[in-house]
Amino acid sequence: MFSHRSDFLRHLAQTSPEPMGLEIVSAKGLYLKGIDGKRYLDLISGISVNALGHQHPLLIKAIQKQSRKFSHVMVYGEMVQGPQVRFAKLLSSCLPEPLQSVYFVNSGTEATEGAMKLAKRATGRSGFVSFQQSYHGSTQGALSLMGGPYFTDAYLPLLPDIQQARYEEPESLNAITEKTAAVFIETVRAEAGAVPVSIDFLKKIQAKCKETGALLVLDEIQTGLGRTGTLFSMEQSGIVPDVLLLAKSLGGGLPLGAFIASPELMGTLSHKPVLGHLTTFGGHPLSCATGYAQLAYIRKQRLWEMAQERSAEFREKVAHQRIQKINGLAWLMGLEFDRSQTNFAVLKKALELGLVSDWFLFNDRSLRVAPALTIGSADINKAVGIIHRAIEAVGG
Ligand code: PMP
Image (cartoon, rainbow, N blue to C red):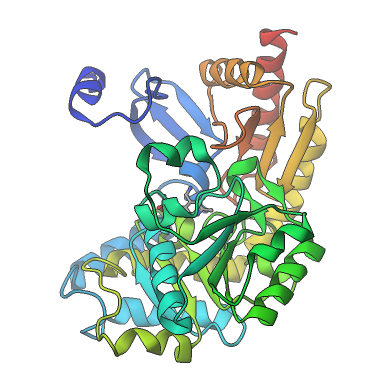
């Protein structure tokens, strides 16, 4: 079979000196098929995207059905497009008051950008607080929130008035003041290696936001739609943010993001100036139709419960003396090794043995575990077997 590898390296902009470079010819369920004819068990679902696995028949049907009716017809927000409205209504029915108004965008970083603008517009303030080792996207506003100088220093100056607080250190919340428009948080520090934030600390952040009038923005881009064992991870702390960010799995494998707030808050984007946030493709009908079909299925099957049960089974089975710590909630998990070299060697060996995983942006000692929520015991056993064989092959 013809390989695109050399053209990939020459004609596709590269972002890493060592891309994984696996060439995929097809994908189904939990498996990717490589050009080498090998099947690879996908333990990361395109980085927390394919909640139902690859090519789920329900999603294919939703794409086909909508593509026969209409695809792109108009920029966001002007025409009444059934797939957007139906999906926004379904999402709202899964969320607590006052999170009932959905602004669809194309990606996670755009959801962050939209929320930053909304917070500035609604509060009349310009300051933001985010947390160390946090990732909210790669465009310049979202990058300004990023908690790690390695990734931001080359792009300075970014937005001013941004401070980084530290999770689990209450005194660092003094960065939140009457000048803060919004505080961006995650409930599980996804790119720090899937480290959950304590409920007590989340409540402290919320209290500080209330005290100062800063909006609380919760990034559930990676944790959303069942991955952490509840439909939204915020259900585990009872925290209801002013703005909720979703993306990744939202479009059932097609590009889709959203920032969600109260109708009153969101209303500020429609005057002074009008068109306070614009997007041509945000809420694409195909993405919304697929997202709707996926969320309806997740809800009907209560897949977050399956995620809880199966991830507990995996946790128990994967434990190994060379794995120092298992972090995370349900299927947003990190297996931490002694050092990054061990992790890289295990990842490489696992790929040879037919398992795809990855490391985390701020934690290269940890191996990422974020499979489709539908993974069953047979594939769990297979993944654990490969991880253990890889660990043993790598040696001490
Ligand atoms: N927030 C979080 C928590 C993420 O994990 C990501 C993507 N890794 C983003 C925001 C940005 O999403 P996108 O890549 O779709 O812009």
